[in-house]
Image 1 (cartoon, rainbow, N blue to C red):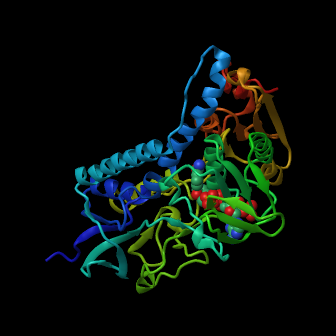
Image 2 (image 1 turned 30 degrees about the vertical axis):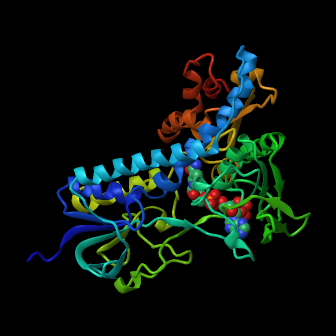
Image 3 (image 1 turned 45 degrees about the horizontal axis):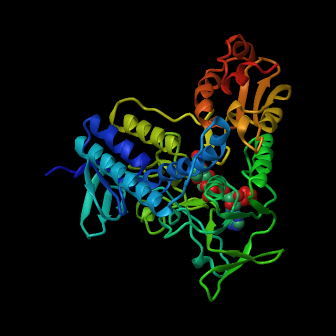
Length: 448
Ligand code: NDP
């Protein structure tokens, strides 16, 4: 009898776990994965993918608003939340099937049940069955955290927001990070009255300041209200079913939905890592080295559960590198510099590399170039919203250290320019590139 049932047992079939499983199997490893909910994980089932579909859907409202300026008469346009919700759910089903086929096609066995760590080389399934594995990969992701206040059970998180029975008329969003700003934008565009309440006095802390200021101004002009330095103190249900939200100061807010988006914590409760001698970090994360290895040589972790960078492409890269390291004869780490990121707010913003403040702290002498422009597409918009791009350049070497953008299609443009920043190109090389006219992206090579 073989010493182990599998070479690799993966707990969690999200982005990182599925990629690690598939690549490990392609290297010839015998692989199994356990998933207690749905194959695909947060990104596919209740995150990036369904969120982006809601963003696209809500943007039609703006497009229809512009259309008359371009000669279109749009009569009888109506929005049906139920139709959108069901379409999004059916696309999530399709993607889950695609992910499942990927596992099947790569001969990765999957168990539709919870799995916990029973020892350095032992996994216990929900059914009670025990499995012996040469390596165990923890890829269980993270889970939304709700601050502790009376009535928090009446509030939803991003897990539930895709299943609302109807479009809420009034939404209170607690938090002003990625998830809060994306859903505030969706509900605002779809016609809900939106109030964002946050504990600090800022949105998207950590993002380039000029972009945050622009997003705040534009979203306020679009009708989103903000209460800063003012987290929720309690929520009560009223006789008509609606919610009354009390914050530290100001009149209570009436809401049909309260969405809490105050960060996500590694989902390690009850995972049994102590049975392998692996102690969790302060936020419940699994501490790992650059190769994804824990203190126990047979236990590894990738993705949100390690609480490093909570982004899907990073989890995928970590999962791939781990499989190559363990089974491909190619030990690899993941580089965490120059990770592009975007917030699919309305308008969206995106950035790569150092912010102006970070560059000043790290490089001393820097040069900053900006472009504040009116996107051509907005010509007929009554809102007159402007885009804003910033290049942060090292004064000594002329290297572009960071690019930050807010405006239509900013994430699409940023992905391409991230290649140039990662490659270490200089501002002079940006300038040598001939503009593609007329476009918004041409601003990147025209800043002087
Ligand atoms: P974020 O960390 O982005 O934002 C959390 C927000 O909640 C902040 O505004 C923070 O306030 C506030 N907050 C945190 N803790 C508390 C608390 N105890 N009480 C009250 N307020 C609190 O978290 P999200 O939940 O929005 O997203 C989680 C992660 O998911 C992101 O960090 C990102 O990595 C990922 N994500 C990425 C997306 C993308 O790439 N487009 C989209 C969605 C999620 P403050 O900081 O102002 O003090």
